[in-house]
Image (cartoon, rainbow, N blue to C red; front, side, top):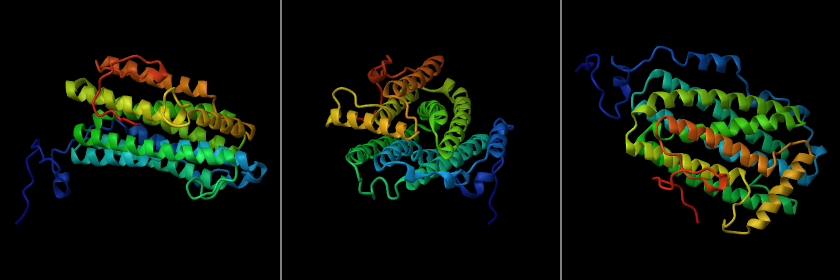
Length: 335
């Protein structure tokens, strides 16, 4: 029996994929994100094409190699969540029969994020093959860094489940602010790292990644302008919760331990500073702890300003001296 195609304007059943996905009535906005694909085409880059052959890792001491690998691993913890978060968002957009432009934009961002993930993996393996979990550290600095990375991975796993829960319950609009906070933070961090790296491969990588993050920021701001004016109070609360979860997670990855954090915070703070000093001495200019906090705080304040335009509460983030509401749903908790 031949399948009947519904008339134009007929809503498709929730979750319908397959032949009905091409039925008339599928939304297709008129090229609002054409610039994105043109930008991807003109600014296309591959991590494997960078100047890795002239990266002389033997010029570094073991402590310096482990320190640089540690900082690349922190970046990898953030970038490694990019592909699954955007892939989940792309699937969700498909299930909701979202506009073509939105799905193509998510796919373009996903391509960039896979490049960032590959970049971190190449850099780490060039420095110390097997780092961090399949590598026995050769220095006390490396051993402490490895212990911290295990905690970072646990925190990232918690954040991923929080993100996925919000996406499944509320849709893409609930996590757009969280993704925007990540992009603002990483763009600023990469722009800070690029001119401070002596290794050409590292400096070029950070310039490319910063440009990608700025492109993603523009896409997310367009989605905010499209979706947030129509949010319900419950959905606005979900946006607030996800921004708070993201600020918590980025703080755990990029900043020194806050007062009261469980565990040997003093040892961790000392080792982070020692890693930063060792990496900087090797020509990998890690921003100071104070500067990293400023970058993250500036990104959160920018998101707070955007939230305010749409009457969405900003979460209170005491570790960044940002005031706001203390109540939000689906916040990541840690012991």
